[in-house]
Length: 93
Image 1 (cartoon, rainbow, N blue to C red):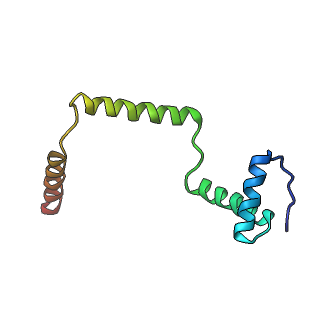
Image 2: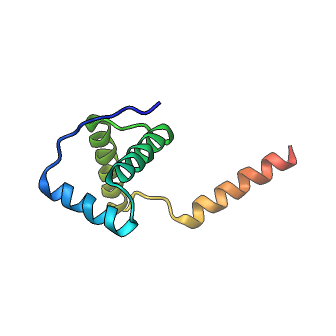
């Protein structure tokens, strides 16, 4: 079953759709349908993150970068050595 949807687009977006449709030699409705499908598939793989979640993530990243700038990080070599020791202990058990 096909459902028809009407949407409002500004002229700039319409011009981009026209150009894309011309480049792909496809009707605009096919281009829009593919975009909607891509977004739906992407949403299934990685659900939309709220603005609050995005802000919290960015704050956590900023805090981590400040920590590294302050010299509070653990050197890569130390982390690798610890992981190898843990792996060795597990394989011997």
